[in-house]
Length: 84
Image (tube, rainbow, N blue to C red; front, top):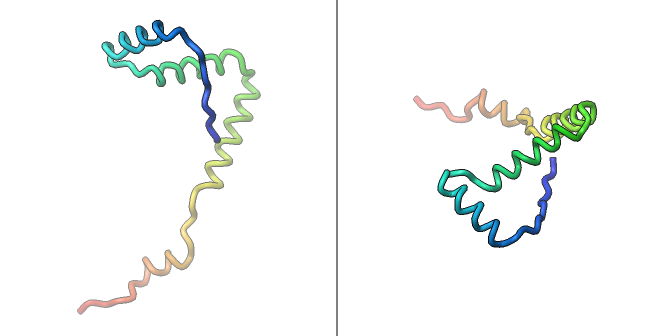
């Protein structure tokens, strides 16, 4: 599914502090934020809606998977050169 960017305004000093302390603990701020948004999604979005969204994502994945063309399959099964 298409991704979007979320913009949040924060106090610059507080942001620098949290980034600094997270870095010391080798924790990535963006990953933590994504994790928290996922928890909000789980908490507030009804299960049937999440299921519907998951099904749409799976459908999109199946559509995007490239299928081997018959020509390429024939090329791999019948090498054009014979060494001997």
